[in-house]
Length: 453
Image (cartoon, rainbow, N blue to C red):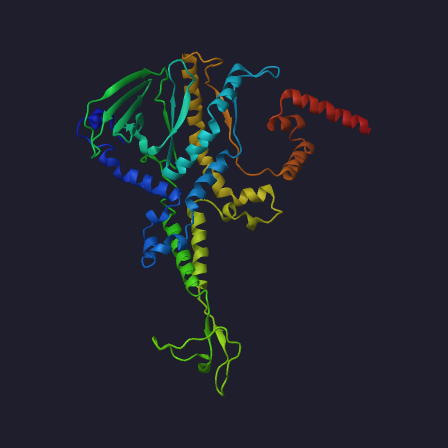
């Protein structure tokens, strides 16, 4: 992080970029990216040591469990596989309000939910997802998901971010810097030396008044606490268990491979004469008859029992802990264990832990995405984008990502209606029916009841 009073000092000649204080954070980001990319041997170097004597066979024999990627996509699926619904303004007579029409156009124009999906994966991989809103003069605003390795919060004495720095270097040693503060973006460039130090004064300096009363950078932190501005990733807690699983699977596989071809035991008389060079006697596999003398053993294959039960028991125990520490459950990754007759309520009970974590994520996503949409509307109105209106009161309904149990829901609705707790019209409103659709359904139900009398 960067303090406001030291911000400019980071961009003076001779200063290293990135700052030395962020070395550990950036190393964790780099390792987590390798884990996501299935390059586990570059992080868990012990895996290479298992095959130091057979390096050429390493890539064929190593056992990689890419649980990290599965975990990150699991959280993104749980939050966004069912698209959230959003409402703005007040619609009248089945005609959408200008706010709703504009909001619907933003979802399509920005590919909003795919951007949200990428941000949720970054929250899991790195501990934070970072969104940036920007617009060229006279053009519609855009939103971009920024890699956290290019993001530095400017943190005040109270521990709250008062601004943000987005900085990235190019292959030709040019450092691009954006400093985001309330209502202002300051952009500039610097030249970098081969040692990664700034060697020029700033050039191509541009200042843009955004018209928005907050910085146009919006971090979404994973399991954030009062003393952790960067959030907590999902990978570091599970690394020891995934490493243990990969080592155990790899060693067990190597043991099984080494003994996959059984040896053949034959009587001494079945062997041919000694080789004149090596003096070794060999068995002729084409022989169909074995001479057996009294007391000789019958020819047989020598098989081997690896006694790997302990390894498989360890794997089961580690997997159990892995699900616990990652706040998931077995049925999330092994759906075959559920059977075919599980109810929606039973599934939610089994998925209670993951659902609670997903709810915590919504506490981050909900206010941030409302701010993002509000900021985009401010920029669009400023740039006179067709149809743009100010969005201030947005309601987002997030789904749980689990399949619906239509039979169970129908039973519950029936009990509510027959018990007098709810009306059919009220339940239809909960399901998202418009007033026109509700009126049509009510008339149809009345006509059906009349026809049965």
